[in-house]
Length: 208
Image 1 (cartoon, rainbow, N blue to C red):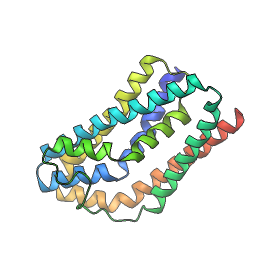
Image 2 (cartoon, rainbow, N blue to C red):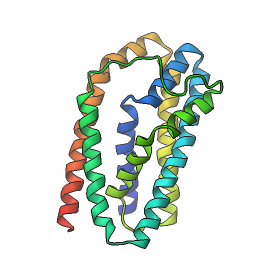
Image 3 (cartoon, rainbow, N blue to C red):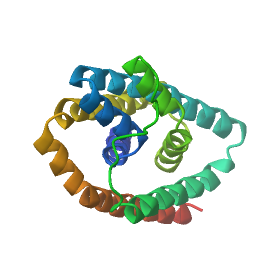
Image 4 (tube, helix red, strand yellow):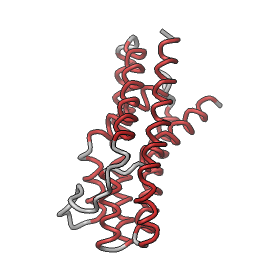
């Protein structure tokens, strides 16, 4: 039951980070507006494929590392919590930054799927973010079923969210509403991630 709770918690944390606009959001929205909603959905599928690679790499690296050097587990948990705090601060600080639907990553790639895939793969923060969440919230030994479920969960989150962005961002009223709400989305996300980072940091301190 605790493993299921961990899966749900990681999914919710990652979902908040996904909703906060970044390069993947920009390339999806721009494609949906400039080309078609269906092309925007293809971008979302490409982002999901990139997420499979980043999340798999993060989990594989952590499993190898912790089996080789178990004493690093606590230290890495602290580093992961600190990075989540840093992400929270950056999101909150830049909450008022406007969304600009041009010059986004992946520009010049003819295939919408590859545009999304390259956008995600070329974003090293994605790998660090997945690593930080997994380090801070997972046990030292992750069973195989949980590894598969985590990769599927975080990838699905990316696909369904950016699919919605592609489908609804083409509508002017929805686009204008989201742009207006962006500052509050980022502030709530920043506060939530900040509280989570502090809680994880405190939990790591207590287990020291």
